[in-house]
Length: 559
Image 1 (cartoon, helix red, strand yellow):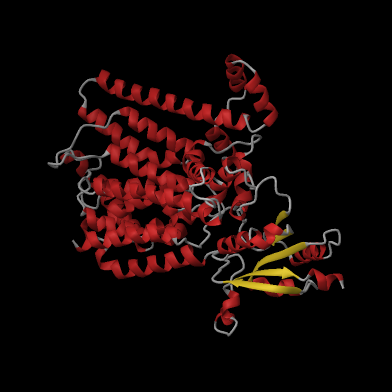
Image 2: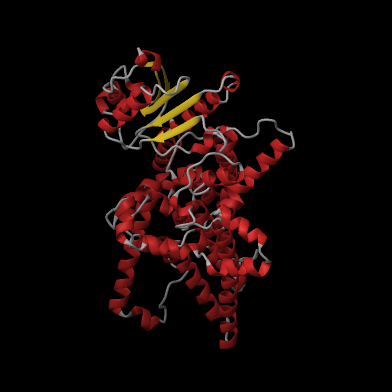
C-alpha cells in the first residue's frame, strides 16, 4: 500500500508539474520537431520551420506532429472560434497543451511496467515507484520529443512480445500485425527505433519458432509481419508525400484543379520516404559533425550515468559479471554437457533484460553524434532489471537525491529563463496599450537556445514584430547588430529588446548602447556560458543565474 500511495503521489507530481509549467528548456528539438511546425500550419502563427520539415529536404514524418501537437492546437483553435474560450490561444496554452498530451501518453510507460513486472518476476509497485520517481520520466517524458514517442513504442513492443496469463502461465506469441504496426510506426518516427526493436523482435521470433512445430505456420507469421509493415509504411509515405508536396502553394492549387488520377500521378512522381532521407543524411559523418561529434563511448560512460545514475552503473556491473560467467561456461563446455545453451528469462541476473538494455545502447554508440535524450527509451528495461532481486533498494537514498537534483537541473534551471521570457514578451506585445497603439518590436536573442517563435503568438500577417536569433555570436558581431538596431532612425515607434544571460551581461555594456529598462528572469542556467563559481558566492549571484531582458534606450541614442 505504501508503494501504491507513493506512485500515486509521483504521478500527480508529473501531471501537476506539466501544468505549472516546467520552465527548463532541454533542447530545441522539443519545440522544432512538432509544436513549432504545427503552430505555423494550424494556427497560422509566425514560426521557424527547421530544415527537416522543408519540402526540399524532408527528413521527419508529419504524421506524429499532426497527431500530437496538431490535435491539441486544433482543439484550442476550435474552442476559440466557437467563443467557448475567447483567448484560448496564448503562450501558456501553446506551451502546455502539447506537453499535457505527452504527459498523458507517458502513463503508457506505467501501464507497460505493470504488465511486464509479473513476466520478469519483479514487484510491479516497486518498479512503478522507481519509474515514476525518475527525473527522466518527470522531465523528458513530458516533453514533445520524438525520443519520447520512441520510448513509448519500445514499451508497447516489449508488452506485445512478453505476456503472461493471470494464472502465471505463458501465453502464445502475439499476432504479427500489431508488432508490424508498432515497428513501422516507430521506424517512421525515428529510424533509430530499429536498434530498440531488434531484441524484442528476435525474442518474439524465438517464441514463434519454439511454439510452432509446423514450418508453414512459422512462415505464415512472418508473412503477416511483412505485409502489415508494408501496408503501414504505405500509409506514412502517402501522408508525408501529400504534406510535403502540398507545401508549395502553387502545386497545391494545381492539384486541386486536376482529376484524382492526375493527383495520384503527381504524388507518385514525388514519392517521399522520410526515414530514407533521415538515414541518408545521418549516415554521412560530415553531416553528423555539424551537430557535434562525440567519442563512441559517450553513451556508455557519460549519457547513461547522466540519465539513470547508479542504475546504469549497476547494469554495467551485472553485465560484466554475466559476461564472465558465460565465458567460463564456454571454456568448461558446460552449456553443451548440460544442454543449457542460450539465454533464459528466469536465469540469475536476468541476462535477457540486460540485452534489451545494452544492445540498443551499443547500436546507438556506433554513431558519432550522441545526446543523452537518445537513451531515454531504455528506462523501461533498466527499471525492470533494477527492481529484480531488489538491486535498487540499498541505493534508494542515492537514487532519490540523484533524481531530485536531475529534476531541478533539467526541469527548472537549464535554459530556464527563456520560456518565461517569451511568455512575458507575449503578454507585453499583446497588452491593451500595445493593441491600441501598434508599435514595432525587435527582439534580439543572444547566447540562448533557439527561441520558439510560436510562443510569442504572432500571426503571419503581423509584420511589426521581428525576431533576431544571434545564437552564440562573438562580441564584435553582437555589438554591431545591437548598435544597428539602436540607431535605426527610419523607425520612430520602435522598441528594441536584447535578451541575454547574466553571465554575458558585461559583454553588452561594452557595445556603447544605453538601456532604460531591464528585467531579470530567475533562474536561468546556460551550460554554454556557465557562471563563474566565485560569483555564485557573491552578492551578484542572482544575475549569474538569470536571464536579462534589456530594452534599448533609443531616445538616448538619438540624442
